Amino acid sequence: MTSVGVSDRLTTGDNVMPRKAKKDLKKALTRRLMEERKLVMKRLLLLRRAGVETLAVPEEEGRKGDLLDQAQASLRKEVESAIREQLLARAASLERAYRKLIAGTYGICEGCGQMISRSRLEAMPEAIYCTPCQEKKENTGRIIRATG
Ligand SMILES: [Zn+2]
Image (cartoon, rainbow, N blue to C red):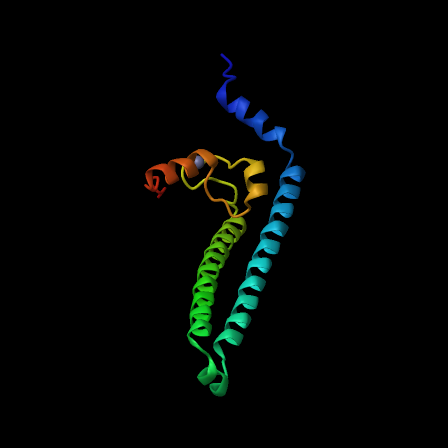
C-alpha cells in the first residue's frame, strides 16, 4: 500500500520555487527595505533641521515678529510634527519588517500565517499583513488573534 498524497504534493510545491529565486527575492526586498528606511531617516533628519531653524528665532527678531508670524510659525510647527509622526510610524514599520527579515519570517502574514503576495511586498515592503487580513483589520479595527 503506497501513500502518495498531501505530503508528496507539498514537496513538489516546494520545488516550484527554486532556492535561488527565493534568495534573489529576499535580497531585492532587503535592499528595498534598507533604501526605504534610509529615505525615511533622511527625511526625519531634514525635518528636524528645518524645525530647529524655525524655532531658533533670534531674540531681536522675535520681539519684532507680529501675531501673523507667530501664527504661521505655530501652524508650521503643527504640520511638521504631523509629518514627523507619520515618518516615525513608517520608520517603525520598516524596522519591524527588517527584524522579521533577519528572523526569517519576512513576508509571512502576522494575521493568518500565509505568505503575503509578492506584488504587495513590492508596493509596500513594510507590510506585515496580507491584503485580506489588512482589510479585515481596517474594517473591524480588531487585531486578529496573535499566534503563540
Ligand atoms: Zn493574512
